[in-house]
Length: 190
Image 1 (tube, rainbow, N blue to C red):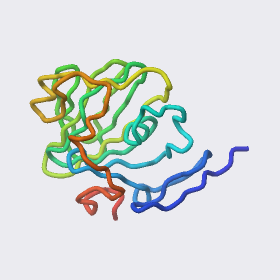
Image 2 (cartoon, rainbow, N blue to C red):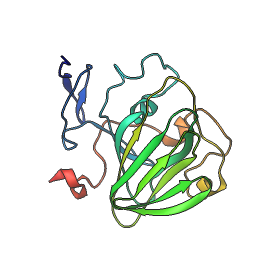
Image 3 (cartoon, helix red, strand yellow):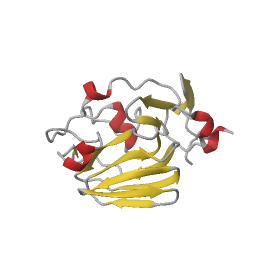
């Protein structure tokens, strides 16, 4: 029998802190937000997922698995690819630009994106309100997250000048535990 996970409160909501099943409404979930990159839920705690990966930042650990990201117009999800991890995305509200393999596509609600391992991709908030993107990726202790140089991504502020496997912390600054901007406009806020 699988035990129910224990949820604990942090500054911006609840986060699971033990292994097991759980139910968590997005309006109650913990969030981190960054001025440049928007808000991201913390639906799975790095206390028990991806252990033994000290090279990953807390931000990178939370992206593996399942997450919900909120980006406002002009905010970005940094252009990158995983060498051994597939990622999939579903836009459920708003609009964004998908930057993928040096191409640009406009996405709107209910557009789905599949990225096999090695597919360079990133997002830029567009439209006039928040864009909500549900992301899922398979977990692996193999491979790296690579941020390749991309003229397209750089033109949108979502790229790096030189290819790297490190996260550009100085550029992004802190990720405080707080809800995304324009919270009242999000579907779970009612």
